[in-house]
Amino acid sequence: MAKVLATPGVYIEEKSAFPNSAVPVATAVPAFVGYTEKALRDTKDLSNVPTRISSLAEFQLYFGQGPKTTYDLTILDEAIKKYRLSQKDGRYLLYLSMKFFFANGGSDCYIVSIGNYAQPVKKEDFLGKENIGIDTLKKESEPTMLVIPDSMLLGQDAYGELHQAMLAHCSKMTSRFAILDVYMDENAEAEPDTQKIAEAFRNNIGDHNLQWGAAYYPWLETTIDGSESVSFTNLAPKAIDPLIKLLEKEVDDNRTAGHIDDKRAEKIKAEIQKLGTLAADTNLHQTLLVVSPLYKTIMETIMAKINLLPPSGGLAGIYSMIDNNVGVFQSPANVSIGSVIKPCVNITDDVQEDLNTPLNGKAINAIRTFPGKGVLIWGARTLDGNSQDWRYVSVRRTVIFIEQSIKYAVEPYVFAPNTAATWTNVKVMISNFLTNVWQSGALAGAMPDQAFSVDVGLGTTMTPVDVLDGIMRITVKIAVTRPAEFIVITLQQKMQES
Image 1 (cartoon, rainbow, N blue to C red):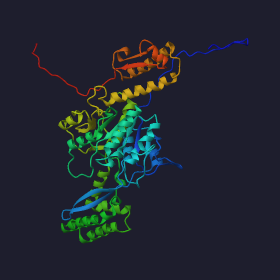
Image 2 (cartoon, rainbow, N blue to C red):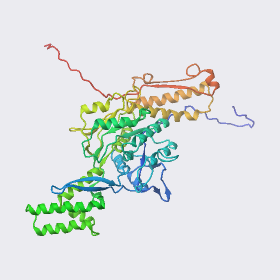
Image 3 (tube, one colour):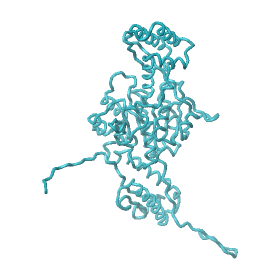
Image 4 (cartoon, helix red, strand yellow):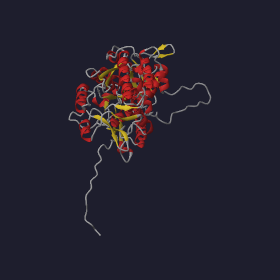
């Protein structure tokens, strides 16, 4: 409405010459849910409060350090010094997964602490009443990924319900993607049966919301936790006596073989006996590492067990690194994973065939070792592998990115006049945004009109009834780039021509 002029003078009116612009939303912001040592910022309790951090130091400031995982030691055959280590207490995965995340290019993320190390792991901490666990993230718009390494602690029978809840949450929010781990029994002594493990995972994951997540297998032998964090204190109290027996047997065998004399043998035994007294300290640990190869082997075994991690934390870091360096349209595959020695299962082409293209479409992305290349992510599929629309992780996440960017850009036009002027502004704004997306390489086409189209207006996307009902309908079509998952090279001999 024009301003009524009543006082003589000169008046200036400024008019906007350009439409609003669509700002690309962030895509590399995972949310981690799990157990921490503490949850405190100054005097404020951060339990079940989504908290944004940007470094491991910040995580340690608010949420503390990692747990002290302890193991039982059982002597299987004292004569040959054969033993078994089995996990007892204090196995929590979030802290080491956060180190894994930052080691692989992770940056900004959210942490939801659902409890501390003093309490047992239970699914109610993740899926409880309102404002508990996953539910707290409903009020946060920034997270774009959901990662819960501690879901593996729930065991074979309970983790599936949590994974289904993660997929349902992502589907409801429509702005985030779940990175899932495949359950493995880390205490199992037998060689992992990949076919049975994959079958159990697929049965537990259900059949709904599969496009909203991707799964990765197997677990990884990492170097995340250093040897300085492991000592005899990682053995349960009742494991000390069996340890002393084994170490003394080693001394006796060395003395019998003539490798050490009686005097040195007694000195070493005196040090070993300190394990069962209050005199045990960090110096004793260093001494035993030097004088006892068996003790060193046991400590290395404990460290290897602690460093066996589900891959989701590292994958979240790689997703973030690729998004920041290339773009969300680039598949997080054929990329090496840092701080990894090897996968705990060696996957061959024949084994991966069933993982990648099962009949039910529930693809599991393999992590494999290749000579001269290291450990690579060798899969790029969502759990909805039979869908032509949502088969690939990069496609699903690119569409999420475009949808959310357009959504926030169009919000200022809510309650604007539903007329041609508004439609034109909206169309130009979305077209300009998609042109930038096309130029970045996310959309396929030699020209912008081949990569996308935007339609809005009466007689095009709306009827007069829509206008009367206050509805503005916008149709956006996009040609998202897809990964070249299979490259086929055809060779054929031809006749000599000269």
